[in-house]
Length: 359
Ligand code: EPU
Image 1 (spheres, protein in one colour):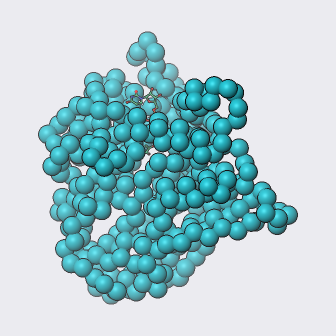
Image 2 (cartoon, rainbow, N blue to C red; image 1 turned 60 degrees about the horizontal axis):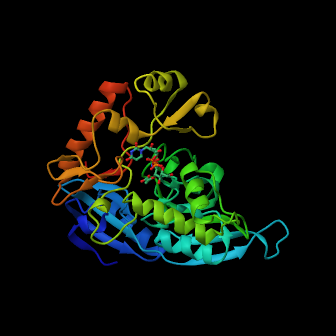
């Protein structure tokens, strides 16, 4: 185990913000993960598990504990359909440290459907079940078969079937009821060999119609390419030197509100906010998800707005950006200003989406 001291964390985050980790270790094997967690526990140190750093805001003072970077690699696929033949369902067992985009590309090359709309998302595989990564009509909860994790409470590896992961919109048991308990080491995705791409999101449907005017059925690779193009236009694709992607993607979740509240909000403007289904489950009955970007704009913020060195992306209102030397405090000041204005205008408290580390 190679331990480093006072390791700057900003370079490990897409925001490019944050102080040092008191201790830092990279684990490429499950045994090393166990060893590192024992080391931290014996010293009474807090533990933070780092993946791709694409959904984090690290405090300016850093993290006073052990940061464990998960570097487990490997993708293995096998047919697992009811008939056991090579068609139909395939399970991809992907180690947590694999780059997400690499994983998506691999499944598309293999002509397996299920992840095509999740192309172009930064981060690693291990983070995907934690926040139930979703975009353009798909979310990993639809295809996760099981999650392998080290249970820090029981000090043993466990394999949790999807039904035991507590998935919801941007949530799972890993970031709610059992936050900090499980360290994800592998995710198994159940995909569909030869399956058709998912075309559920209106914006994606429109873009596909434009790119395939001859009316033919688009393939998985084509859908993924269109998703990347849409993301890029919104500054949501990591491109070296592009100031708009020094961010953590969406900084706020889209609020899920009651129909009555949505109607009250709609009455404040001629057009009303874009609405999306709240999702399955009894807790979502009679509720609707509203576009946070719209609420923020209606509360008086424009794309490109600045508060000190933090700002709003010039291409998508939901992304806060580090416009230079922003500190975590600058970002939180801006987030507070936006949150207060939206609440004052609409009575809705926006929830932050990124994980806060060291606060
Ligand atoms: N809108 C604005 N201003 C903007 C951008 C969007 O008013 O600058 C309005 C538009 O009317 C648009 C609506 O908001 O119709 C929705 O915008 P978009 O399609 O860009 O999606 P989103 O709701 O803002 C969510 C996810 C994204 C995901 C997209 C596509 C959350 C918090 N964000 O954004 O995920 O890529 O849908 O599915 O749910 C992320 O989590 O980091 C992320 C980028």
